[in-house]
Length: 276
Image (cartoon, rainbow, N blue to C red; front, top):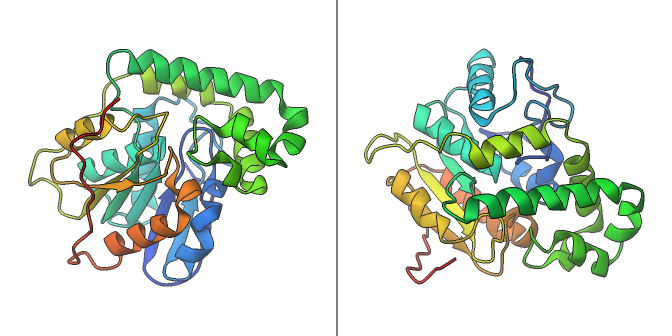
């Protein structure tokens, strides 16, 4: 299938993959800064933005299969890539399959366990139901710091600082994504994410995590790095589920350090004391 996408900038291509309910616009806080160094290809996943849903169901692995096929059709196999949330899990899956180059996975889903599974499902489902009900009021609510704090507290460590236009675009996208409910259930209760054995990845992989992530708790980083032992782990301080919102400058610096020169070392922040 054809995925709607935009291209910005020039240089070595860099693919950006948004999370559930988002679109290519999810990268707007970092898009221009990245496009100053790379040719950016930012996609709308199936059932998101301007890309229609898949005809046979929209589970995570159906998206992964369709996306891998699209990379081959577009002659983009081996492209460096960055993903956020569900898109970050998709980056891990594409890296496991060996179809992408250097990769950055920001707060990937798929590594919750026990009580974290229903917490993820019901908390996100509840948030989206609320946003759908508030759609006529979203411009006013996102236009002030108090409204953004109330609506984005689960997703951002500093929701009052998220730009109003970013908040409005993202929340409208959450509310209007036709595949959101189907995908959310598959993400929570579908097959677990497969890992990649040590030594199997040919390109650098860094998993970035916000220390204040209330969607994918920081403790899940241990499971992610256990599944992908070749990956380096990078911690964002004062950061929730979306580093591109809370720490845009640091996010750009990390992405460029990982994907510009594959031989360059990446600064990794480890913390064995992380809980939740």
